Image (tube, rainbow, N blue to C red; front, top):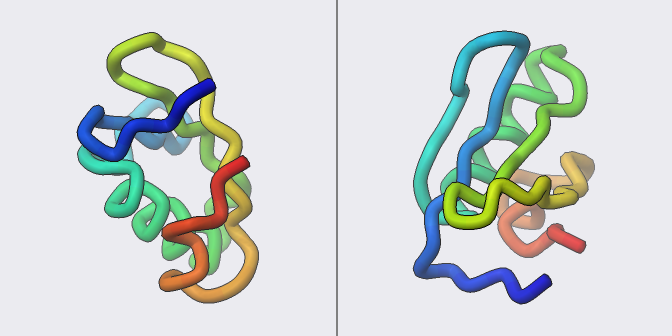
Length: 68
């Protein structure tokens, strides 16, 4: 899957949307929530609905480019 930084993404925690925006912004928010104990948060492409696999480990800065 091609991850275009101009598309928007959404991260969810339980039944609420935690963050929405660029992949970079959503990855940082997901990382911070993971550090707060929310566990692994699913992130989806708003365009395709496909789940994006982000690695929440490491620093918030590192999480910005930690997608696979």
